[in-house]
Image (cartoon, rainbow, N blue to C red; front, side, top):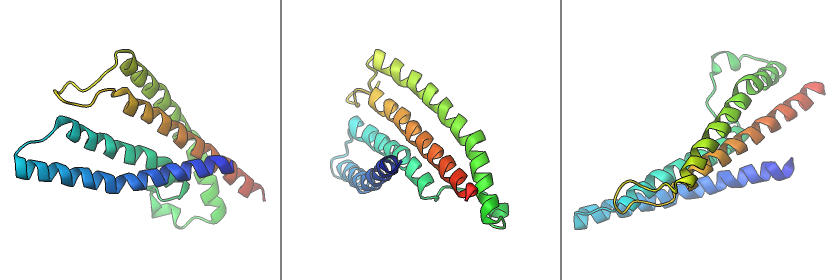
Length: 160
């Protein structure tokens, strides 16, 4: 379990380091457009793919760090035990099934993309769009792994 937690944390760090790279790409794109009145389709698409990677790779880490969005109206008033119980139940009935649906759907989506070797329909766009689509599968797997880790930790805490 410690290896899995470290792996998820490292994916979160990759996500964090992609942010300055995305800022650099956007700045370069803006300067190219400003000075040369031109842009590249591959650069625009790379910006969108990079944004997607940041969001996808950071999702499991965000859950691990407990920095995701919650409805704190009631949650703040809960005891520690009640918080553990509610987190466990909601993770089991909402997050884990959602991850399984995401894996199944995205795997089909990515596999179809790989089968046809999907690339950008735009001239000069990025080839091999299946790579980012398989990244969606990978990130749902990471999110599922983190959800299972949360359930296991919460059950251990509730038993002590």
